[in-house]
Length: 582
Image 1 (spheres, rainbow, N blue to C red):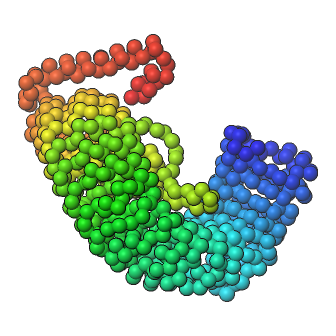
Image 2 (cartoon, rainbow, N blue to C red):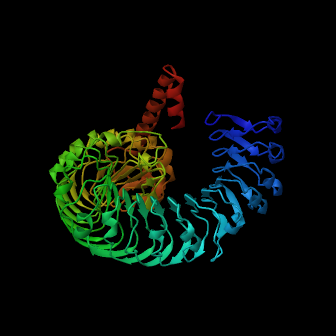
């Protein structure tokens, strides 16, 4: 009965099903307490799957009475309290998943000392739970799958893993483990395919010998130093994430020796240097935050499967090549904070899947391309909860979630789970000139728009009224003139606005979100007036229109908008609801 939108509570009468062997109610909307007393009477129950519901409450001390259980998955609920010692009575368990709940206290893995058949164990995502392991404990079981993400583990690498010869999947990420990554780890299991030790405190070097059957290796966000061992190039890796360490070496040597099986490479925020000359085609390439020089390598021009290219925060130079149009799968292009120059090529129009374009802090010049309004990927207003990630088709356990840092709302924000929803256009801090193309208003999926720090002139396009998804708009430090379009009042999601340091004039519109912004959003314009900057428009005549004319204009505009709403009522209730929310 899984994934059937079943609501309500789990009735105690389920205990009347005395011959029940398998109960699978996962991915529903069940809530309340789990009737453990009733379930304890089901002497033949071997499989209990209640994951991804809304159950709360705690596991009772009588929890161990379910002694016939072989498979137990309670993950992704709101269960709380401690994990009771009676768990040790469920010694027939082969699978135990208690991840992504609200358990707290201390859980000793030695509580499972009588478990001989368990092969799949996950306690991840219980942020208040502390998992501890006796340093000399030797378990009786042989795990294939072990996930202890965010379990507040401390100290050296758990020694008991050296006895787990069947391990295929090991995830100890986001803990406080420290010291060296042991050399013996690669000799434990020739079958290991997934290893994630990211977000810990490991230091030293990457061990010289890496398991040749690894498909995913993540050592990101540690304190590792030195180079990348050659054994990494000799294996069958599909995902390699060594980002946010202190690794060094010539980037040409690194990327020139990559395995043909590799699809995701993330080396950002390290100390790699040199030029990229040639490399295989990938799905994701993230080399930002290093010391890389030279142009964008021409070896990428045939990589039609490349979806993410991040070369930001380096010392790269040259122009964006015209062959960029060949990267037809590209969804994210980040070249910020380099020394790129020249114009922004018209060929970017061909990248119909592009949803994030960040070219900030370079020396690009010329006009903003008129055809930017044709970027189909930025017109998408999808409400999907899709996660932009890499999934191995042949190994379902391998999943790599992409992250991206975007300058929005005046600060750096990291997007992960919501990355597929983000549409961002950031060309700030360059030498761009001319006016803002009217067609930018056609990019109706945009959440972030940043044109600040250029030499743009002309007026703010009225077409921006169509950017109804926009959350952050920064046009500051340009040479823009004219009035702030009253149509911006339609942008009900707008939570950050900066038009300061321009030559704008006239009344600042007071409706919608525009009334919520402070003086700093409009400062250093000179000829603006309005309540946001404490300047009375009736005594500050800076526009060809009189203040009475401005009042009339604003009233006429509001009347026009509500006339459209009224018209919408006659054509459909759904349309009226959308406008009404605005």
